[in-house]
Image (cartoon, rainbow, N blue to C red; front, side):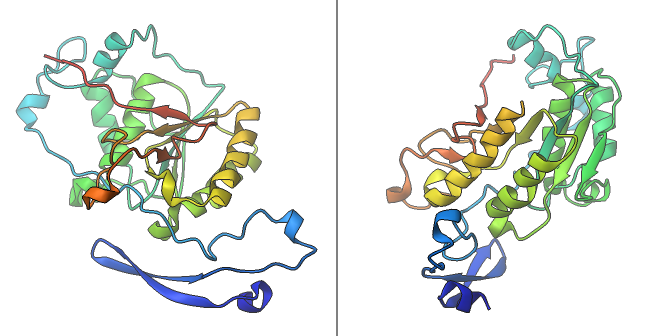
Length: 283
């Protein structure tokens, strides 16, 4: 049906994601009826191949004896803690507001552990607070107990967001789908959904990135249109700018010719606030 409608032919491609392989169907191009051309910006999942997406983080564990040495101010010597962030960035108060909400976006098999959230808040002398809602059902203690890498990103994002903005209702939004089509589905299923939801969160946090060069201009402009709508509604999208600086991103510079200045999406979008890490002498 789609081949007839778009006057094209779809081919089968295999994309490797670690040890797994995913089948994709893409065409070399497509056509639209002349009376539809001026009304259609792009038809996704046709000729565009999915970009690489940052994978799950590798976790380095620390001995329990080290983490037990928490000062009365909630600090651990040599580690970045909520108390250290408050001091370094001169955050006068962590009191949020129950009249607004914040959302953490997650994907690629990440699961939030409620028990770990409670332990984190207890360890660092924070108010005990659970997430207010979750979408996608990836909230469980089982994944963390089996493999810490399966919950590290989700736990980190939620725990520190709730530590900095305390008592603010926090929604954990997990997108469950084919990882290779993550960003297309993010646009269609998440951003568009948020635009039409009755209780739109005021802050959306995203920790996933892909090189901007791997996206088509049509996709980038379509995402921009959705981000503009959210901005007009008073919603702030915050996205990580990557872990390795502007010259490369982990796993995306397999050969020397591929290295060089590379901005990362969605942090590079003009309607998204990019957030980078700060190296602090914590000793």
